[in-house]
Amino acid sequence: MKHKLHLLSWLVAGLLPVQAMALADEAATKPADMLIYINPQEYQHPIKLWQFYNDYWFAQGPAVEPVAKEVMGAEFGKVGMCESNLVGNTLVKLQPKMFYNPHMKIFYGTIIASAYSGSGKPIGTYVGESQKTGYLDVVPAYQVEQSYKLAMQQVVTKMKADPAFSDAVKNGIPSNETATPCSMVSVLPSIKSPK
Image (tube, rainbow, N blue to C red; front, side, top):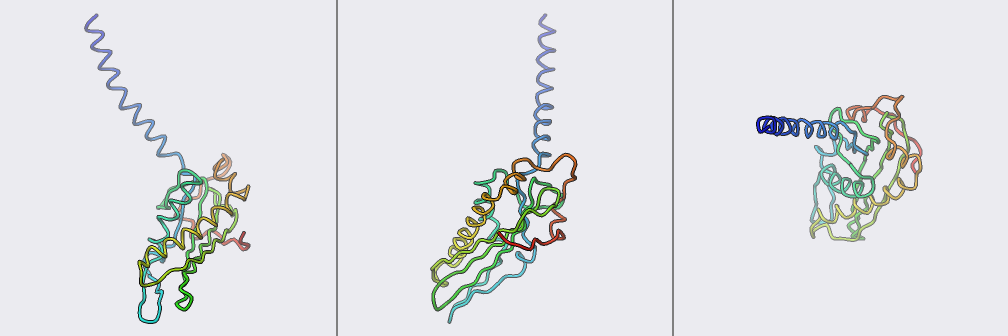
């Protein structure tokens, strides 16, 4: 009896890690609710905001990425960045723009989000714009971040109001369609009319 109990305990101890790995595999293969694509150019080529004696150079990709993850993650669940062949229920291509008016001391932020279903079908384009008063020579990174955050919140509000987008995030890719990997987002057709 003691031998059988000892054998049973070893069997259970051996199967627990296997079950844990199976659950981890299942979670890893489940697509994200949303994957965000930002053009690599936005990471490699900085832009310049200027005022009379000061200027500020920054790359838009690193400025927008954490804001997009935070704002969209709070509203839509599991949000990730596009990397190679990852798939998601929706694919969102972000195009950030920033301008600073030195006379009025206003940061103008714009984010254009083109959304696609997980199979690459166009859903819509959503534009968010912001105006944030601030000085270019006083913590400009924070001013840029806050301007992008306001624009991103407008984008999310418009996305939530669109039933086609909400349905794509919630239901994912239909079983009769194949998933489009993130590496293909840059070649998906552009969507003409912004919402």
